Length: 292
Ligand SMILES: [Zn+2]
Image (cartoon, rainbow, N blue to C red; front, side, top):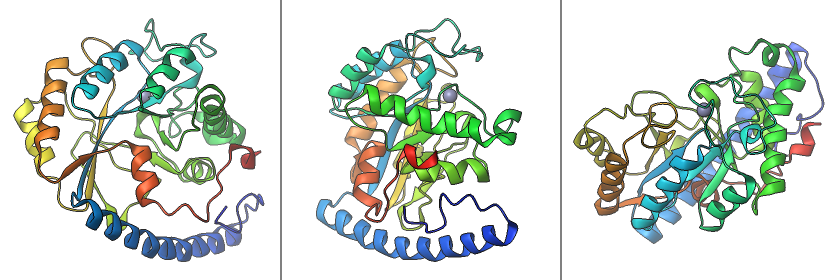
């Protein structure tokens, strides 16, 4: 862990303030280190604009179609699984967009992972950390959602996850503190286009664009074309066709991928690749066990 105070359970107000100040100093050091990493990587490759395609909720049918289309353009996606929904379901599905849908088995997700796609966490039960009263009151509920989903993915897949996508794009101060101890990055999102500036990136509040799938493809592509140098756009989808929340049509999705593949100076990357390339993780030793 990079933060000296982590794990000591000090909750007094003054303790928190000192911890915050120490964290800010560490963040500045990290910022300088990762800035030089960014310059190096950009100079080597030449392409300095980045785009990622992410899918939330772990809907298998859409994931399979997405994988086929992504591979048509030699690109990779990041899929965020609600680990309690993976067959055999351990958790009752309350979300209407996910009820009665297939969230795949671990063997099926291992297949997708083996094809080079990135798989991350979307918690154990799709909890909203902002509105769920239990999560707000009991730290153990948050720990279970964040750390158990990490353990599920680590135990069932080849690689442990590096990032989490927060359900409902909700992040609280308490959940962010715990997320930092388990994951190397966390994604939130919004309905309006938002890009991440690589020189001042908050790895635990990565912005994504949950785009309206009824938006004309040309408009979506215009936004992608407008990614400034040294910026990273994360697209947030759920599924394709008629599955899940705000699904995008496979034709539009195909068109977006084709456009990305033809854009000059634009790299399509997974969230894992971005973390590995740009985040200074030398001093970090994240572990789900450290939470307990
Ligand atoms: Zn979700």
